[in-house]
Amino acid sequence: MSRRRIAIAILIMAVALGAGAIYFLFDPNESGFFPRCVFLTLTGWKCPGCGTQRAAHALLHGDVMGAMRYNAFLLIALAMVALCAWGEWKRTTNTRLYLAISSKWVVGGFLAMVLAWWVLRNVMDW
Amino acid sequence: MQYWINQDGVQAGPMTIDEMKSMSITSDAYVWREGLNDWVKITELDELVGEIDFVATDQPNVEPLIEEEPIAEGEPVAEGEPVAEGEPVAEGEPLAEGEPVAEGIPAIPPIEQQPAPMQQPIHPQMAMTREQQPKCPPTNLVWAILATVLCCIPTGIVAIIYANKVTSRYQAGDYEGAARASETGAWWCIGSIIAGIISSPFISVIKMLASA
Image (cartoon, rainbow over all chains, first blue to last red; front, side, top):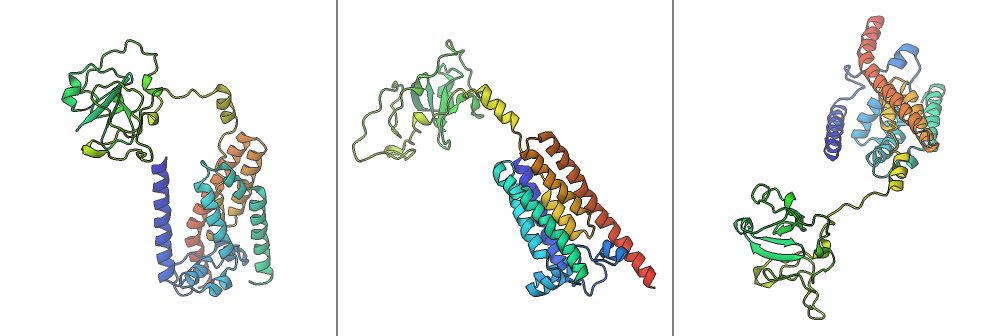
């Protein structure tokens, strides 16, 4: 079990490092080979994740304000991901913590924020 | 390698494996050597298994005496000497556990640290409550959020809804329903991520063709 956990942790770190290197070295604004948002292309509306790639590039270069401009929600989502990953790591040993982090108030609140962000960014053109 | 042995409350050592072979040792004896944190059952020390022919125990159900009479901490016991009440240690000079004693003889771990020869049986009621409250199934929330934010396909939101169902059902005591929601949510995560990866290049090509 612990060996499997270590393997998963190493795999995730390797993928994160690789992706980080790509988004650090290449600017999605200029390079053509980055994937395009399907939802935006099909509907003309932005999805909650639109701008994540450009925001990641900006964030990796220390440009927090630039990242906020491309996708203001990304930082909140990353914080949430970090929190959930911590809870996931502790799931079998600390069920109470896990339940607190993934309680319906936290998850429901996050879901409401995603939906609000999705509507608002299209209405307000964020 | 020097070994110390403790059987039926009688401690002996140091001795080599060859010396131990000439002794009559029962399989419920305990053994310790340098490098071990604690006494181990002689049958559990790999280097001794197959080396020593154990004598059958005549009283298999009798608990070892060593449980009852702890000797003084860290004090080496002379060869073959039965474990008596520990020799009184000089006041104000308590020997730290496991601290090496003079004359190069390694300190013998205190007997009371010895692992209980028998696992305490789990009370049936405790086993019941443990079974009644299984571990919370994974909510896959991390993947759901990542799919929503990174994959450009809003189906990740469905996975978030299922993550919510997992915990609310788990807390309501519906463990089976929670497990089902967990699994469904996992499939939504996988589906969203795969769909996002597969569809993006197609969409890019279509867009390029359309603008050309």
